[in-house]
Every structure is written in structure tokens, then in C-alpha cells.
Image (cartoon, rainbow, N blue to C red; front, side, top):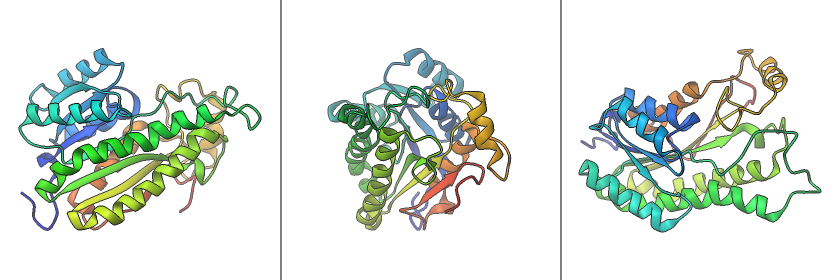
Length: 260
């Protein structure tokens, strides 16, 4: 199966954290469309996860509950996925978002920001990525192949709204992406990030005023906000054979708002 560290998407077992709703749901659908076996991770959205499994087919997808900031729950998730599909997870999409709402009026200001705010986002963006990486590494090394794709943000390049806690955590996740890429490359494992702008529309962006979407869209060459399915397609690239020589990179998918 593994030729030149290249495995077709339809031969991969893909874990999508936070996969039941929003961007995660579109990432699950994208991999399902390409024939992958998909593990739909969820924390509270059991019904949405079950609906998604029915949509893809029980032979191609399985829903597994886990809080991905909890090491023990992540290890149990990985074991359950291997038992269900009879082979280890090859590909991890770290998409789960700690409880957050893109509402500039409600965001913590520099005067009200607390370390608890920061810590919550760091747990979701960094601790969870470390947990899923450590839990899936044995299986990836066993097959000599692995793909890890972390979901980031363009806000640390262009803080159109200064969400301090969320943005700092995603910046830390990019650093972890690059250091993991350096360490895991010899094992045939690539680690990359896909950074979106404000997506139209997910649960997290549902409270964003329409004028903010319009402002962002007006600054892009495409003159529109990006949809979750469009970012999901970019995630597929990093998992595909076409990206076999790409690691430690951050691909910005925001309609051209941020350059580089």
C-alpha cells in the first residue's frame, strides 16, 4: 500500500476531531466522498455524529465520543477506531474547537482577558493536538505512513478582530506543527496546518454580524467569505499523494485576504 510514502485517500483511516458539526462535518464529508474510512469524533453532538455516519454509511464511518483534551479518552478513541476498522488510524485532522464564539462584541478585552481564557484555548488547540498525535503515532509508525493536519486561523497574520486567547493558541499550534514536522518526517509522517478566515457559516461564526462578513469579503480578491466545504477541500490536499513532499507548512485558505 505504501509506495514512496504515498497512500491514496481511499486507503486511509481518518480521524476528524470535532467532526460532527460545522467545519468538521464538511471535512468528514470530503474524506467520505474520496472513499476514506472516517472516525467522526464528537464530545456533545451524539445525534449529529450519528446522522453523519448514516449519511456516509456504517461500513465507511464510525462515531466515537471523546474529549480530545483528555489523554485517556483519546487513547480509548484510537483503540475503538482500530477495533472497528481492523487497522490503525493513518490520518488525523485536529479540528475540534474549544468552546468559542466569534462575536467581537463579547470577546475579552485586554483589561478583562484572564489566564483561564488563554488556558482554555491552549488546551483545545495545543494539548488536544499533542494527545491525538501521541495516541496515533504507534499505528502510523507501524505502517510507515502518517498525515496530521491541524486547523489554524489567519487571525495571527491579520487580526481583523483581536481574539487574544483564540489567536494565541492557534499561533502556538502552528509552532507545534512545525516542530512535530521536523521530528516525525523520518517516520514518513507529515504535519501541516490549514488556516481559514472567518467561515460562512459555522456554529462558532453564527453570531458574527453580517457587516463583518461583508467587510472581510470586500478585502479579498474573490470578494466573498469562504465556506467550510472549500476549506475542507484544502485539507484533502495535505492528506493526498500530491502533498507527499510537503510538511511543516501553513496553507491559508481565506479567498486571498492574507498574503503569505
